[in-house]
Image 1 (spheres, one colour):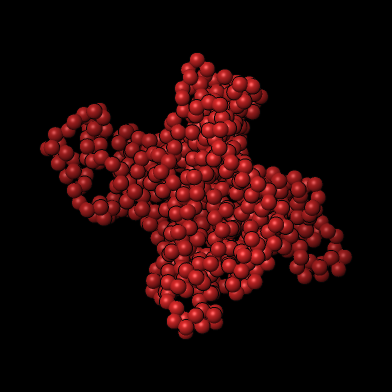
Image 2: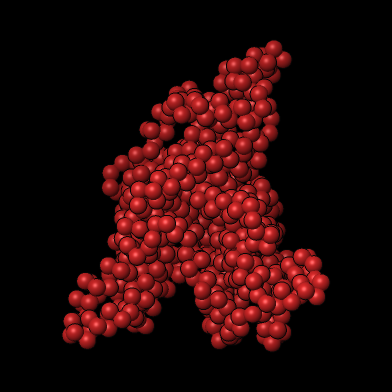
Length: 291
Length: 316
């Protein structure tokens, strides 16, 4: 696997690949594996229905029957927290996926074709980086109407910039390499060069950015949910659960503690993976990441 | 230098305009006819009211809603440049007065959070670097890792739970004296503290490896003097830059923190007006947040060049 990875993706610069040695990558991957299992096997791991209301059992404190207690509508908090893993992880994958596609497209286009198009796109990237993106995403969701899809869409709209910057930079440096010249001389077209040579060379940097972005996306998504602009009830989503539970802080601490704990564990997992990948694949990335 | 400042200022102004234009465009996406909303909410005060065609036409005329979007934007812009940001649909007061009433509370909160996070982060970061791989180092880095992953809305709730409900030491929410400020400031500053702490540590470690530090050691200076007189000055340059950038992000966090603690700032105003679809107030809030955001970025940029004279202005 590691050999294949090396063969496939590391081209000109032979970057050292030693992430099995990176403890944080291993820990992060294990945590993500566990969370993925929770998401996939949610119906088999839980005893209750995530949305069915049971008013006779509302706000029951944690017990053997309900490990995390029940909420104001009598729903089992553990069940909802587990089901929310699906929604939160899928939605943040959506955000990161859209951002990566958009960013790669814009970044490679700018770097590959250069000239006035490059200048304009770089200007756009710089403006987007300087915008108060969280606030604008908030306004966009408010305008489109609250909902998990709109929230994810708004966050993707502001998430692509770093991918574009990094892939543009990589494209610029690869474009000058001799083997690209050689491939061109043999008669390869732009599409072939971009998909076979330029895109693979961005994999290391883009995957590092993406891992860190996943953690960030979950935080932003849950924040929108917490403000009532993301997932709408009765959908189980961590941020929205915290928003619903916040009113009952005085009588039911478990409504506010467990969903937040899950957010933190998930974000930690992606951050471990991202930090580890960065150290293993691309130590120079540190400078790019600090903004 | 002057040219550099002028260029940066121009960019900051451009960002404010871009933000206001984007916001204007986003707000035009609100479904439903704006004229109907205005009639229902402003003139009649009843959301179920069904206005006649003549009333809709008259309102459109009055607010120039029939014009294309870019003309509406230019109309808004020329008013805004004259200090007229419109009137709130709900309170009936001008947007400017609504915002100016709320602004001091937000600035107070942001400054308190920044000061708090720097007071904790810089000393801990320096100690961690000075005693690399010690217990202090490991525990403060673990702390930073946790705070970076911790959602601030959850931290706020947990702090209320512990300090207000269990220990009954501090008020649950509200605005007033110092005791009201403590929990919101911690909630808002925690993320910034974690990032700054990590950065201070790595920055100090980097400077400690440089040749002039070896010279200072060879000269026989004691470690404390080296750390405080020679290392800190250079190590603080990247820290200040990132602290400035973080301050910008902190403004996004105020929306959440002000909502949790019922803090009467501009972030709470923004969320309330998004809930109420009070378009003029939303637009005004975003513009003011963008102004503060760009101003902070500008000052950070300029101070960075001042602190590090090795950087040439033309390069940027």
